[in-house]
Image (tube, rainbow, N blue to C red; front, side, top):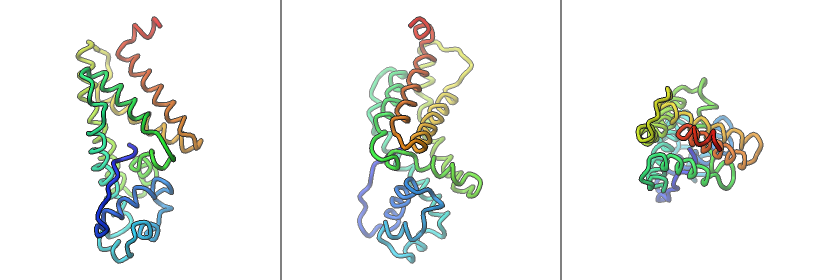
Length: 211
């Protein structure tokens, strides 16, 4: 999940400033390469303030993943893809929205929790679990529309709304990896185009085969 709504906290809110610094620096450098000094400098706080709010760098990682989940949830709840009345149109609008926000520097649109999960899944299980809560929590928000689209179109195939919702996130997270590997955001947008085609085929297989 990329690009949450940016907050503008009061300068006295050191905890929020540290979480926002973690969001930005970890996406740019990775968790291991991000030091407490980096975070304190970016947030304009002392190390004492850091350890007042977080017992360790790993605790900061867990809190950053939870903060990401909170801010991105608000971002996606306010997004325009909820507007169409048809559930399939809403799902396709979601994919189009995810493509549209692949803009700017790679660190600006890639997913904090995806980055953290890849790096810490074995070394920091608490961070990994926080990332899972974020990713799967967002994934679940797509299931109602997918199931409604299945019902309205009489889809009886053996795939489920939950499995397709997970697949959308597999494509999106993979698209971010490709963009990073090639330093080319266009590859991420290309992946979203293929996801759009795939979903259309699932719901209109006869039309797609005849095309």
